[in-house]
Image 1 (cartoon, rainbow, N blue to C red):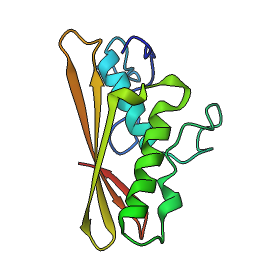
Image 2 (image 1 turned 90 degrees about the vertical axis):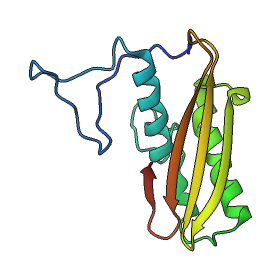
Image 3 (image 1 turned 180 degrees about the vertical axis):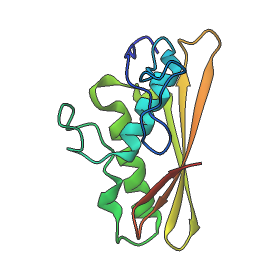
Length: 141
């Protein structure tokens, strides 16, 4: 995680700003791991051009809406996920693993694993992402 040294506002799972015990806005600093996790989630939930200052960071899974729930669609989603995480050198491609499985007629489950060799002990972060190709629901499990 040497490349990821960002101080950011702390967001809840639902996208709300988190307040600290003192009533002030919470930040991810000095917890680099929390900052990294938040950045991964933001990239995977976002579409391209969602963020004015960083217009090219989203996974744009919305592009898959209306497509059939098949291997081709799942592979396209996998490519979107990898592109969002490797954009601007955020994570090296060699550290990312993505598996997928259809779990319902309109839902794909993506398991995203990111190896963090720079952490004290080698650690692998796992993100379980449920994507609805009919209504564009993105849920982290």
